[in-house]
Image 1 (cartoon, rainbow, N blue to C red):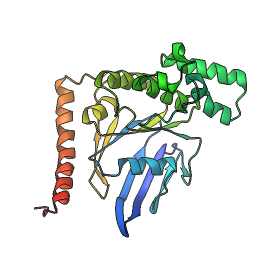
Image 2 (image 1 turned 180 degrees about the vertical axis):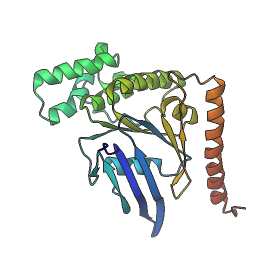
Image 3 (image 1 turned 45 degrees about the vertical axis):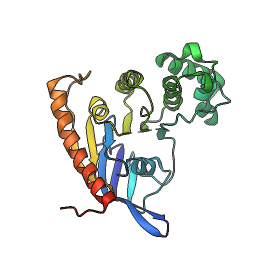
Length: 265
């Protein structure tokens, strides 16, 4: 009997009540993510990428349909799913080491295990020299390294990432992308990653899920079979980027038509 997918989304619909009216954010989402797979959610602003990720995390249950993680229905946040946000979400009164240790302390792990785990992840993410610094003393890239280390330390099999590199400069973003891929390749974790970046999605993912503008649905799932490490300057990468760009731009154009109130034509 084969193992269930790490994430299964079945007929998910999400409706928000806003200003006395209903807004359909997601409509009929079906998606499977295999254990150990790296999948990116891509699409224009307003397509429901983060809404879907929050539903998988258990923060915001769907209006209809269901989500399963490891074969169990998601009804709330759980230790099998860990989230990395764009805003770092670090405790400013805690040092780097204390931030990384926090989730392990909540779980009641013994102190020697916590020290060993914290030191291990600080080492893997080049943070050992900063263990006693506070978040305010770190660059944006360093803060995001701490946020990633804190999530990885609790060893959840599913990693949910909501545009974690979106606020970083290009060089820092590429360094962290490579760092994330290195850790992912050695961990067997499943990653569901939200991004606005077309190049980023192709650089990272096994598959890119392109979503439609509101209501969010799966427009197309694009497999990325290029060998890693991937070269964004290669002709194969550029051809795939062109294909994905066309899909996204079609939805962006529909978004802009809706904003103007123009007919679809």
